[in-house]
Image 1 (tube, one colour):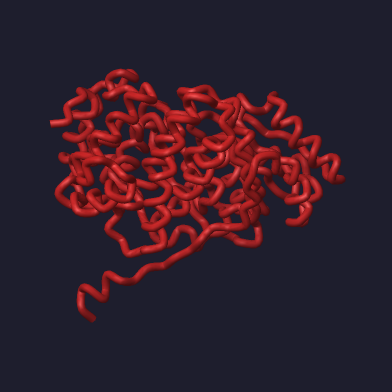
Image 2 (cartoon, one colour):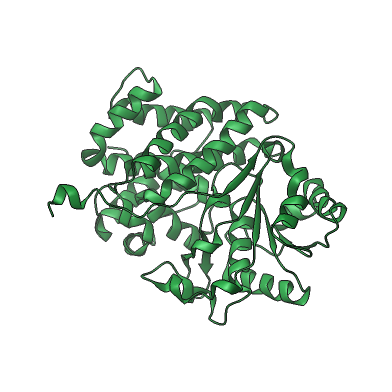
Length: 392
């Protein structure tokens, strides 16, 4: 078989049932009943737990004839103990399903809880390495209804969770196909209370997912097409969502772009995430903000491998300069509009752990989707440029 034919192969999976639209959070209880739940555990983060949207979700379940309890001991970068504690709460309450409610942290923790309630191995035995996923006792995975409250990670349509291994200060990807929620209730109205800086950071995370999926060298034309349109939606609607959080059209389009990014990145991620994951673990920094700051530095590092495709993307987006420089300048202008810092130093990240960051980046699963396979030294160099704000 020739190399050209060999490269035109892939294993493709597409997401789940999505109930999309403003006001559709009232369907949470019905979705749970559809999956056979009578006593779901709503897993979220402490910032959301006391807000009306969560109490309304619990009330909606109760009105549908269900019991419902809340577990919210989840860190912004969820750790293994959060998952273990969630599993304990699930078992103590006699629950029979999970409502994953929140941004990336709440969704990732909830999906990991749903996975682990029926397992007898520890969480990190299911890290996305080799065929570790085959160790899962599939009958033990709880059904999941996912309700996103940010437009960034797209975790509601993903089959994995990013959980920090605190003992080793490493973010690990936990994967199994049954972690994909069976029903998503995507209500953009739940995002209207997000402050502008969180809207900006999560929106840039959605951009990074679509962009890295588009730049991935793997064969997946459907994912590539979705990524291109996801990027255009970010261009058209993220500034509006940040400027006016009540703009329901912008909020809706950004929620779609977020789910599109996570759908597309089954094609692969790349250097932005390979660096953002270790930085998140080492510095406990916001994942979306890390990707937003790293984005132009990784683009420049990959320029030789992606220049042609960036010209096609820039043309589709209607940029005046339909080439790599035109796209890069758009990213820089967008970051300025959204008040995203130009360098990692601005958020308190220094160069003391530069060599460790480079090594961890090569070991991150996302590195496999980068357009060029970078060495630890090259990742370290890219990281240092991002610390100093050096785009040359």
